[in-house]
Image (tube, rainbow, N blue to C red; front, side, top):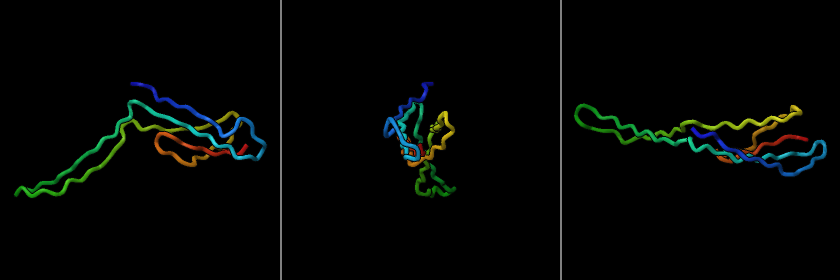
Amino acid sequence: MAAPSASASLNATTFSPGEQMLLTVTYSDPDTQQVTVTVVVTDSKGNSSNPVKVNAVIDPLTVTVTDDSGRTWTRVSDTGSVAVFRAVA
């Protein structure tokens, strides 16, 4: 099993106290798989329902952000491959 990969960047290299910090994290995992399950119900006379599809992700990823000052990072958005977090300097 391959390990997930991640890269991160801040919107600036220096911040004044109270200034907004934005952290962008790009991440992926080659082992993550999308699966589609199709269900059809058939009765004893051979009548069948329309197919119903349900999607699932096998081995989903979770992004966690911490820093050494104990600052709280709040998720602003997450597409499943790019997440943006916000904190105050």
